[in-house]
Amino acid sequence: MEVLARTKNQYPFLYGSTRYREKGEGTPTFSFDTNSETPGNAQRQFYIPWATSPQPGGSYTPWLAVWQAARDFLGYSVLAVNPADNRKYISRWIPLPFPGMVPQSPVPATGNSAVPSLSALRGFMYATSIVRAEGTVPQGNPASLALGALNQVVEGTGGATVAQFNEALLNVAFTSPKFNIMGDADLFVLNQQLNGLGYLPSASGGGNAGFYTESSLMRNVEIDIQPSGKYQVFKGFSALRFTGNAARDKDPPNFVGPPRPFPPGPPLANDVPILLNEGDVMIRWKQVPAEAIPATAIANTIGKTNVYDFGIPAGVVAGTVGCFFRAGTLLCLYPRYRLYRMVNGMFAYDIDFRFKHYPYGANSFFRITSIPTALRNSTGLIPATAIAGGITVITAASGNDMIVETVDPHGLSPGDNVSILNGLKFLAGPFQVTILDNQHFSLNFTEKTPAETITGANAWVLSAGFYPASRDGNPLTGIGSYNLLTQAGDNPIFGGVDYSLLFEPEP
Image 1 (cartoon, rainbow, N blue to C red):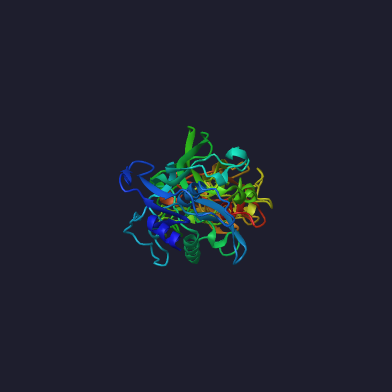
Image 2 (spheres, rainbow, N blue to C red; image 1 turned 135 degrees about the horizontal axis):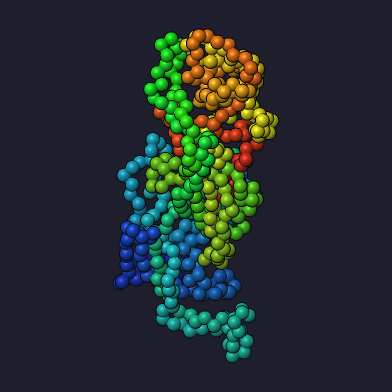
C-alpha cells in the first residue's frame, strides 16, 4: 500500500492502466490551422514508470510498461461479443483525449432533445502518436533477466539486452481526426435513440451487431463525396421535339375538359446531349480488426443497391456532418483495403467502401415517355413489337379532339405520345394523349369539324416525346424515377441488400 500510495503521488494521472505526470516545462505546445485537414495539433511530454511491479513469480519485462502506455494512449480495436445477446461487435479503446477541448455547437439536436449532441461524446484532439519515448536515470541491466554464465544473454531466447531506467519520458502528439470518436457505451445509447427515431432499421433485429453497429456512420468513419456525371446523346429527328406554338395553346370555344398541354412541335434536327448527374461516394471505415472483416456481407453487396435508407441526415445529431442516402440510390463498387498493425500488435484494415450515387435511383433511367405497364411482359422486358395496341374505332365530336377506342386496356400515362399506323397520313402523329379511361384516350389538338368516325386504323404505337416542365413536369434535362422493371415478380437490374451489414462483424 505504501508503494502504491507513493506511485499515485508521483504519477497522479491515470488512463487505462498507465499512470503518468506531465513534464514541468515546455509542455504542452500547440498549433492551429483552420484550412488544414488537422486544424488542431499539440504535443505533451509525460513521465511514466519505466517498470511496473513484478508479477507473482517475479517474471516480468520492465520496458513493456512503455508499450502498455502506447496502447492506452493511442487506442486500438478488438472483436468482442455482447453477452446480452451473443452478437459480435467491434469494441474500441479510444485514444487519450486532450482535456477540456470539447467541440462547442450552439445548435441543439434538431427537433429531438433525446438524441445527444456528439459534442458531449467526443473531444477536439486525441493522441495519435508517441513521437519519442526515452529512458531517464539509467538503472543498468537487471541480472534477473540474463541467461547463461557470466550473465551473457542472447536476443530471442528469453534474455534481454534492453537497459533499465527509472522513468520513461514520452513525447505524445495530439491531432484532430476527421471522424467521430466515442466509446462503446456512448455508441450503444446513441444508436438506440436513433433507432427510436426510425433510423437504423436493422439495428434492433436483422443486423448482427445490434445497437453497437457502426452503420450509423457515427464513429471511426471518414466520408468523402465527389461530383460525377455523364451525358446521353439523342440523335436528331428522333426523340426530342420543340415545344409547340403557344398561340395554339388556347382550347377551342366548345371544348369541354381540363386545360391541355402545348401541342408538339417539330423534332430537333441536331444531336442533343442530356446531362445526367451522379456522385462518387467513399466511406472509409477505420481500424477494423482483421478478424472482424464482414467478408460475406461485402461479397454479397458488391453490385447491389441499398434496400433501406442508409446513414443519418445532417442535423439529427448536432456536432456531426451527417451522411444520408435514400433507399435504392447507392450502388456498391469493389472496396479498397489497407492492411496495417495496430499498436496492440494485432492486424487491422482501413476499408474504403466506394459507391455510385444515383439521386433518382440506381434502377432508374433517363426517360422521354413512360412505358405502359400493361405492355410489359412477365420478365419486365419490352419487345420491340409490344409497345403498341389494337384500335377498335376513332371518333370525334364536332370541334373536339379525336378519341381512340382500344381493343385492350392501353396502359398509357398522361403525357405519353402515340402515333397511329396503317396509312392515315393526316393522323400519323405523334400526338400527346389525354387519358379518358383504360380503353379510351384522346389525341390532343386533333379537333375535327364536323363530327367524324374514322376506320382503317388498326394500331397505335407509343412514340417518344418531351415537353416543358411548366406544362407536364418533364423538363428537357429532367430525369424521371421510373423503373422499367417494377411489376410484381420482376427483378430489378440491381438487387437490394441491407448496407448496414457492411459495417458489422459476421455472426
